[in-house]
Image (cartoon, rainbow, N blue to C red):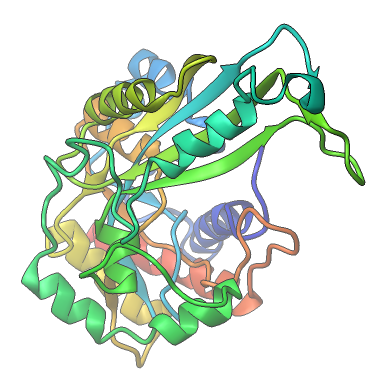
Length: 343
């Protein structure tokens, strides 16, 4: 199973131990429960839908609970009611039949690495907006109540700077940092390369270069529609003298649910019991969990996202961590959730 201490082995284990402690103390669970653990989420859960369709009757349920999101701040119980979707692409630019001497051929043959740089640069304007035509056509606006609630959260720009170590924050103008991360779509370069990578100088004109891209999407955006627009933009912007090849990656739709539904209220009661004395934070999250929409499509059920990871857990990075206080709080949360849902 892929993942680290916080994302997501520690959070899964908190579910398991919450169930185990309830069984040890009560002798039985207050509700019927299905425990489903799969290890392909980081690569798009390619086989999950097939499994759900094959076992739909055994997996039939009233609600789903997942802990694969985060807490907005230490000790702050957090209910996540929205996730961004995702679309992934890889572009490869090829030019000459092999690497060339840049002094002998530079100026007469197009450079694939320079072409990739131009394509990547074409994705944004100078103000942080994605420059792909039609990219924002279907974007749902941020609700007024969300803006007001997020502005009061115990996590802001200073915290983002501390967690990321970035010299400054940057993004689409007209929105707060949390609004950009949770409710606005983005285009990101996950990897870029080509040509000589060793120490010192080698005057090479590379035969090929590449870039790996992902696009985070928000409610009402459809991955297939957005990816079609991105591909058209890249082909239109590709300079002459090179060949552009675009291959698709995994995709997932954005997710949004009502935090004040009956099950949402039960989840919030459980959060208060597990983390007493703090106001519950109602948030969206910038990451993507494609299986949430797969569950909704196949099983017809909403998902309660009850995350336990902190902003500085270093998910997907060296030294990923999961505080013991959150781990034990998660065990208590899962025990309380079983009881609250039974009501």
